Image: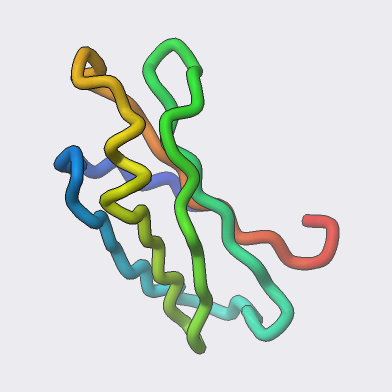
Amino acid sequence: MNTIKNVSETIHIGSDFRRAYIVQGDVDLTTATAICKVRSLTGKLLATAECHIREDTIIVTIRGKDTLKISESIKKGQYDVFIVVKDY
């Protein structure tokens, strides 16, 4: 199942950012990992999130200390959350 969801989010510099995503459908996450990276609109890596999977939920966390590395001149960016199962 391929799903793309666009959501407006705000990451406050110096604050923790945490989101939980519930995976619906027939997806076996027992051996899966998740990856989340935040990039500027020009593709520059701004932050890498810690991702944990619990049952059918992916928990994405970017620590406040890591958001301090994001330049205040960056006003917009994008992030993606990917589920990796084996080689897919």
